[in-house]
Image (cartoon, rainbow over all chains, first blue to last red; front, side):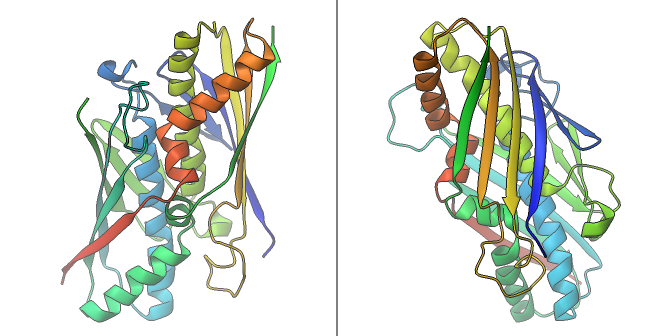
Length: 147
Length: 147
């Protein structure tokens, strides 16, 4: 297949809230009051975990089909821990993003443990979002000034 | 501040669709039909770009305040390009995630170009989502089997 380009347009609704459009879909991102927002949506780092969940589901089903694994039900608990000091401009040796992300997949299947371990390994390698998180992804930021 | 932990719970609604809960918020992630979904929400890699947009908005306002930059309006166009071959199990030398992400910030402000360049550099360094994308983030995946 040829390369695919995905795009979003975002508008700031103030210091904590952002409205994002992707094709016909609107996503509202906000922060809780203690992080400077109005609590009208999940926050950016929760969106990041959601992106990972969605990707693992899609690639999980794709790889399961290839491997002959029947998924009767699949759910996930995903968590990540970060130190907000750098975000708020305080001195710290910690990075600003998640230090680690933990995923627990709950799967209803007849497949044995070894097959499931192989499945997870393949899913992780082929999932775009886990690749973008686990390996460096260049980001170019430019600006256009209106005044 | 002490470390913060963020959590989401996700349920697969089939091969393309995932419903994710973060606190009181629900996010619906899906794929368009040509990528195996039912097109009921933005897809995982669009959610990833949304997370970046939301984070840049929050940190952008925080750093602008510190630097005395008045943001009258802020919007963003974010895009990323990926080769889906590895995702679909085809042989390729390309990575499976975005090869690069491009952000154009449109800002209405009186600040001069040099100050805005310094602002962007600081925002990029302090934004958790850009950190998690630009630098390796460990992901641990385990599973619990029901049968």
